[in-house]
Length: 357
Image (tube, rainbow, N blue to C red; front, side):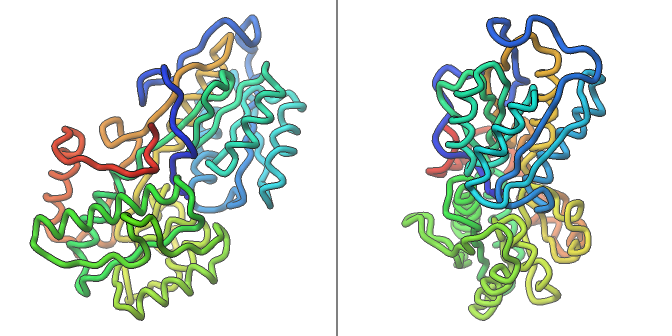
């Protein structure tokens, strides 16, 4: 979620480097020489979803561990899970004071805390997933236009649905979450326009930016309760954008409905529920984090530029259909592929108030 999404609170600063490009470094600040083998320390602070959220915290951690495998300059990465928002500043501060060279904050909820701690530790490299902090030259932003991939998932869900009702809900009403919901709703609307159909979206109204939220990224009981309510209204596809809360939706699916997971391919991150996952709206957080950490270790200064994941650069995508492969018609698969190409070409526009600017 934060999946949450997410993209972030606020837009990218003007003048940032081209979206999706590998980070660059400057020699104006930071250490005077690249670190010796195994000495560049990467440290990660999760938001309240925790390291085992099967979603974006887990995928960011995967990126750091893959970076260690790719570069002999990196020490073993460290992480700490925040239990509450009040933990963000002390957790980030603790790592900075312990000499962490690359301090990763995961999630838009950590924007203010990252801004504060980065300002107090100007000689340290920070990075943040799903947010950007204009003017903070020591904070490297990684954001994702998940509305594009969620648009594909919405179109797919509308085409797959037998009841003509699909649903989505979020963990919290924040941009990294609502961007998924916007894309999903627009994908359904596009299906309706193309097919002269009337598939309904429960749980989110893009026009009013109002909908259903669990107010948690960890409470599986709330995820189950929301899903039960959607099923009672007739939904047969549900997309939770709620981190670990969404596991309550996946666990309860059985043969009642299909689930669209988010962030990390559900059949990889929550294998026990693979039979429930129609697809996943994927954010390639691991690759973005890995690139940034490895580049940081090679750098003699702060990273410059930014990362924006799109369909075009494979920063966002939808996962394979896995156990639903035989249940999705060849015609629908072809339409989804064509729609992806049209979005990349710009002939189909995907918009959301929560998109990174």
